[in-house]
Image 1 (cartoon, rainbow, N blue to C red):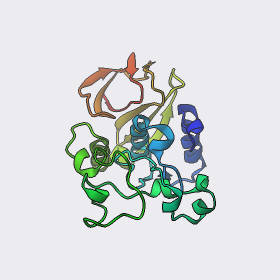
Image 2: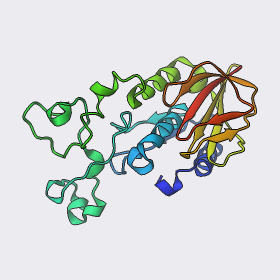
Image 3: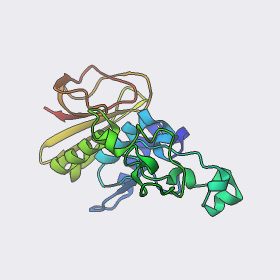
Length: 239
């Protein structure tokens, strides 16, 4: 989806429409990016891209993550003389090379993508020394650790893996909320698609924080009058 389409109401309509169109027993597949599309962190911003990963990894169905999105990688400027994409050589504005830059493994030459001294086929991002696997796996609140935490939760909590999906009505048009449930265990996911905090009156009394996009919140929270920070999302176990 383009930036103009990245809002809570459009995303909810897309998810609900897909779910309602599926026949009984069918299994959805969700994709936010690929080698033909500008990276999600470029389209919606790196801060909001954490919300996107939370959405991707808590919806019912199979998530597909394009390499580097788990780091928050963004498109890279590629000079015309370095382009390989045929359609980019004809028209640089249509090049798909910016989203195909080398995976950023570490802060060494070539970002660890090539052997020392070997020049990669496309340029590296200017921030590759800060945005790479080696750095982010050591940072307490990094984008990579947030994604890894979500994957671990998805594997360990049946409701987030094979549970049912049901969207809920919220009093803020900037937010999207839904419940995943399996064998009586319910988990509420709320996402703020704006950069401003939103006051929510959630249809539950209390929830235990299982995950927050910046990995900095824990414990029980009263949900009837909950303030969701901008560019943030939460997973609550309903109690």
